[in-house]
Length: 366
Image 1 (cartoon, one colour):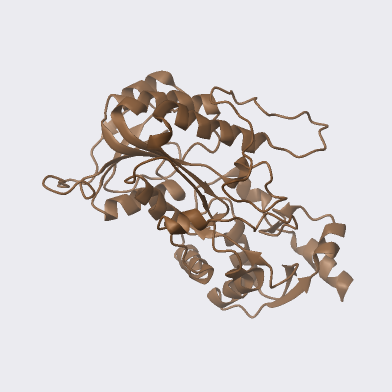
Image 2 (image 1 turned 180 degrees about the horizontal axis):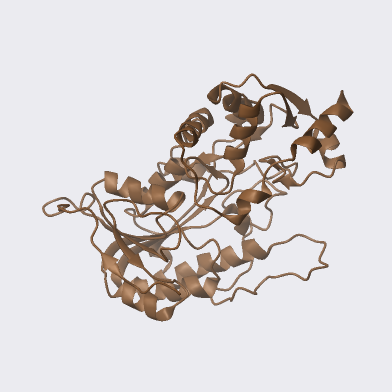
């Protein structure tokens, strides 16, 4: 049974009285108990902000110090009662990855009268050219109306062309945020790959565990290939910064092109785990012929030209900071080594090549 909407106070004794506007910010986080949402809440509390989170309460523990409201974003009554608990200076939406545009529209419409700004965490998948083309803010965004339901853009089972379903859904959700708040009160953030503590997808954790096992490790493609993952804490910090700016904002979030490489990433995994493993680099064409699922069977490996060619200049100009990937790798390993684990998620099982298949491919090139 779905939990009833409830609200309870966070950390006792927190007072924002007498602080300036930034220090006294009242923030609503949609989500807030795992990965990016949790990092946003922790970052806001560290700034001395008053934080309310809105979640179903089904997974992930709340961050101590935040007020918690339980409810379902697809339930109009829950959303209406949430709006009644306002006002807030800003809303940061971190939990719309699996919501239809019309659900985002319903929530944003209810919150627009009681919140000053809406920061929507979207994805580079909204671009028609991803992952085949280099991307910038000028790249074409997919269609997707703000009132679309979860069936919009779904393709037939026998479809063999590009699958833009997820991108169309998220493009529609972006338009929903703008339709409700107006372009001048919205920041649209489009990250590529986010890694770090609490990652539930399983990309970096898989590579760390594989490095820990040691032995001969299949390393994909070219070690000099540029990659652009960003740390969850840096995305969270920028989302918080965006909640206090003015005017319409749209930014891609990715590490600078050329700064990080696949070779540097895998070496960092070996170093973080103190592994004696040996990297054997296998050319892209060999991996493609082997039938490996790109992006998942070997996490972060993809041959498409645009997957790691995302221009984030505007975000850096606006104050975004992307820490070195080596730091993200080391911190994530420390987090895992302390016995922590992410919130369970179905995507975790998608990632990683079976040991016997890895050995077979390596044997074939020796």
